Length: 267
Image (cartoon, rainbow, N blue to C red; front, side, top):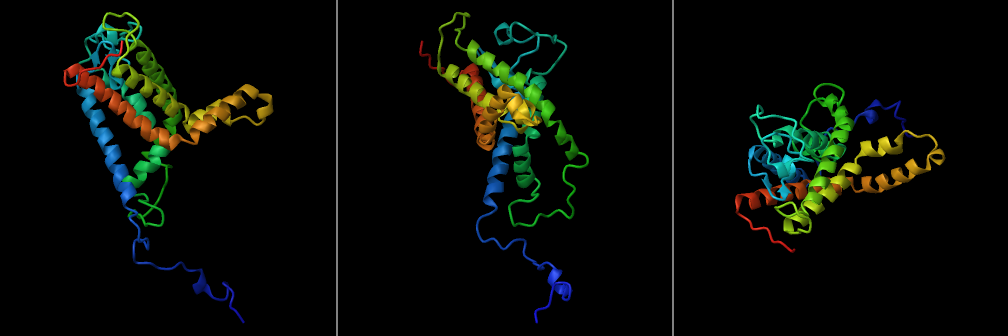
């Protein structure tokens, strides 16, 4: 007669494995590559924050937009608006990078990525993590991740600014419309991808119609919800692609401004 679990308490115990994992594949490769990719972006962002070569007409480096300082060149200002005077001693990127940076830092996908690659919590599926206890996001500092939805609103503004700057890049150095160069195309593609990543956010999907009980009563919001849901399915891809398009666009403008790269003009 077979013993039941109640009759044999030893059956309720989990297998005691001394090995960290029984996986034989290169499970460590994904967290290592993720760590390298995110770290490179952070290093570049810190450098760009203090680099003064953020503008050459008609291009504004994305990491410095919007340029809110009175010391900003007139062409770098959004609608000529510069509310902060000369008393602020640091470059404009210090003021504006907090919004998109906070948005990405608290993003649901990026949280999974850097939890696994930086904190090894856990580094991969079926791999034991080195931490003794798990508290999730229920206490400081991780409970602050809940501000993600508020960073979303700020990121929408930044996306609008980058779209504005991409449109303004169709002007020449004298402010006349009809210019187009490599920088114009790069800034335009970046604006589209940044906007797509922002709108694919889980918080955006919830804000649009996630709290509705009856979609049939709100057909327009339901349609928006459907569009955002399609973008949301590609949130991971858009997160990675937009992260490097904004880095590349920012670097391109700075290289042109420094005279290292010559912008090719089509007309």
